[in-house]
Structures are given as C-alpha cells and as structure tokens.
Image (cartoon, rainbow, N blue to C red; front, side, top):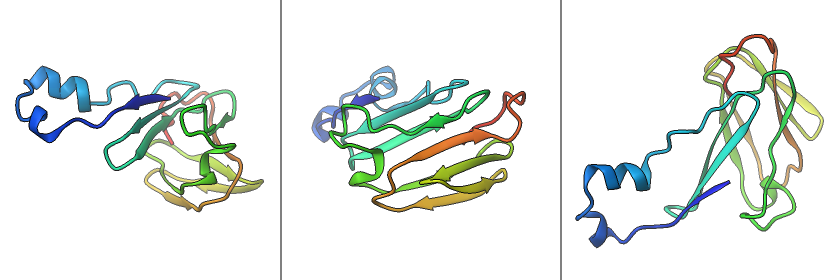
Length: 125
C-alpha cells in the first residue's frame, strides 16, 4: 500500500504542475492480477484498483492500516468499471456487472475479487 502524506495548503500554492502531479496524481492503480491501494492522509481515504485475472484477489489491510483486516475500522464502496466479476464478502457472493456498485460495511473480515472470465484482460473491480 502506497502512503501519501498531507501537504500544507500554503506550500501547494507554490507547486508547479509537475509537483502537483507527483503529489496528487495516482497513475499506477490498475495492474493485472493485483490489488493496488493508495492511502492518502487527505481525508484519510484509501483508493484502490483490482484486476482479478486467473486467481481470486483478497483485500488485505497490510501493515499501514494497523488492523487485523481491511474493514475493521472502515467501510468500502466498490464500483465495477470492467466486465462482469464477483465480490465475495465473508463467504457471500455478489455478482457485479459493468457499472454496478456494492457497499460493504464496517466489520466484514474477508473481501475477495474474481473475474467471471479470467481470459478477459479488461476486468477491473
């Protein structure tokens, strides 16, 4: 998980376009077979991208959140921007078509992502 620290508003007024892009633009969010997460101290938000291909991807808290599981202290909104896939939350499957959304509340311990067609490389959940 990448961590981004908050910037001082006075300092950001002096940033060049390149510096603004370096501090705020997230460019590498989607990679096949991976979940990428960026934790920003601006509003304490986690932004993520997942492209499940051949294997199911599990959402993990990592070391940065200092929790046993990702949703121990937070909730999540999931939007499928690719072809059909399935999100499984604590054993219950939720099929998502393109542009479908799913809210998963605080306290759910296991969230996984899988593609309905692993050969389709355009899957993004």
